[in-house]
Length: 426
Image (cartoon, rainbow, N blue to C red; front, side, top):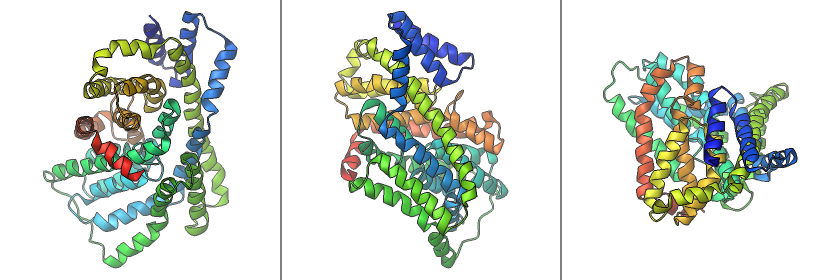
């Protein structure tokens, strides 16, 4: 009954257009009332605890770093470098998009921010060079969801906070899956370009131009090296890495490239603060629901339902794949992590699944939901920037969704493809 109350209130409130954070909070209150635990003070305490968490301090700083890199020209320089290196090849601007998506993923960790930057910079360029605008938009959307997998990753931070799993280990475990996602895009794009004609080829850049583009992008490319190196060497924690990233991006944009001025900073700070407020309010509201889920022993109930599957890690992971795929069609990634992460992770541990591996797979499956309607926040971001109709982008992005799903299945069948490299990096 408690499950019906939780799901009915949550989905019902979302169906009438209520924001997810408020729907989460009210569904938690509904469970409180049903179990006879309603207390306004308990509600306030849980919401405060949900936002007052030290690792969550990484969220505003990574958000700020992403805003600064877009406004300060770091993202544009990465695009220019990719164009100089591979823009002259057949379908080259598609490879530029993929390469840029991977590099940007290692800078900001936000799927929406990366997608918006890619769509604004590359879709017009591809359209002007004879590429189908729908195909270009689909590729940009598929490339944007690499950001939650390659560190620094905001979803990994949220998952680590929600499940008490090492964020640093999640970061390192996400490197190879993220690169594999990029390689998957390359293979799909290559197959598409073999059947496409009428493209205008970019002029092959001389090595002098390539070296110039590399020099201009060097400061941006140094940031992921600093973050990964600092984490690997134990110099700073993921939260401190976020501060380093924000300060570094500000310093380069203000004093090296000088594309930002101090007068621009209030606008950038306000934009990153607005996005941060949305995420932290979601965390606060989700802890109310999470507290009631624990009090109602929903993990235990699910353990009884999934009991036979717990005996087989592979079957359990396939069940998680199906569940998160369905949930991803209705919920965004952040509430999915905050609601289901604490419920499913103890079950995964009972099934003798490495919790770090499970965290990577959970987030990876959840990111695919960013490409599936009706929510599909990444699809909405691309539509907003490019003005391409949603149904056209959905058709273009479908092959990438299927390819990503096949990659997830491969990681489920062969977990060491994720756990092996993670141990090497860490």
